[in-house]
Image (cartoon, rainbow, N blue to C red):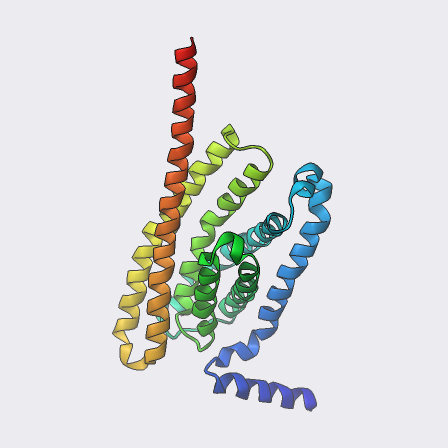
Length: 271
């Protein structure tokens, strides 16, 4: 009886704050955030065993960055695998703006838990890595938490496809730390990184952002103004960050290539 009353009270609370469906998914969100902390702890246990020289040489911010990349790897693989079939879910396709699916709610709760954790993890190292990642985490959390109104459940899966490039980004980062910079393996991974980042985040991302705008515009009279503002600002910021990061990646690639050319020129002159 008490449990039933507590559940009713929770339903009332979440309904009052405009996140009615979160009443059924908040345990997954909390578990997701806790799993991120557990993954950091596991990384601190297993990494010295697998990579003793590299991990033990990392200090302070750099060691925590390693652990963050481990969490990121787990999250990106998990959400891409879990959310892919939602792109073809008939219920969500019928109503891309206000449609709801319980399975999708659990996937977005996992994403929210991660992004909530990521905000504070990024704040912790903001002095070293800057505030772009804090902004990214906050925008993503803000976008996905409102999926529990419900709102844009279909497009939630669409934008989780951005994470297709993240495994290659993490692998690239780990290769740098493991002394594999400039190797053939890193080159191959880099090609996958550039391709998936451009394809998933720039081409697919910008196209689906326009599609989301068109879908919302068709029912704009039913959408609260504050949601239009939040999603509009987040959309512009996230797409801008993706373009900014893509340009940085291309410039980094050019610098490495130019170094390689300079080396070849130097060696050929020496001959």
